[in-house]
Length: 231
Image (cartoon, rainbow, N blue to C red; front, side):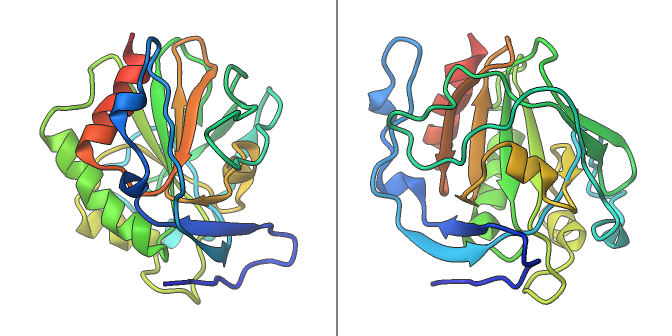
């Protein structure tokens, strides 16, 4: 169950997390819809990175784009490393701005643009990410993402020595349609306080953090997460 990743010496340890469904219950949503995810089982692992928020059609991604991809850090302070949903100090803080490109070279940016968004950070070698991607794509295919909400994925922690590489091939096989920011140098992951995979950040229309959660989410939990920022 535990996957360890060889990464650069300067990279901080990250974790691959079991399904949040074991601890997440949408009934905890009260008023503004708050997420409470308790007792997520975690496996220690190390990180690398991905990046982009523009176009990311499964037919145009280039598998050789990962290693050279870098993320440009813009304005805004980094979020604290995520530890727990309860008392998360990032709630209400503005998200940092990052710019990069997708596998096809399209420009992608994550910043306060007046639209609520869900950010999903993925690692190609993470078994929980591998299970989450088809669930999310099926959820999107069913039209369950509110039209007012954007979903941007971040391919990070890439490592040629680990399974399921390159991430572009993996996402193409899964017919992944959301924009992908290729975070080749882990800058976006670091800026958003990533500590485990899969990693979700829900962002309000004013560019502030509504909630953060790690682990696999069910379609019902995805509905609740999107609803928490759609209003």
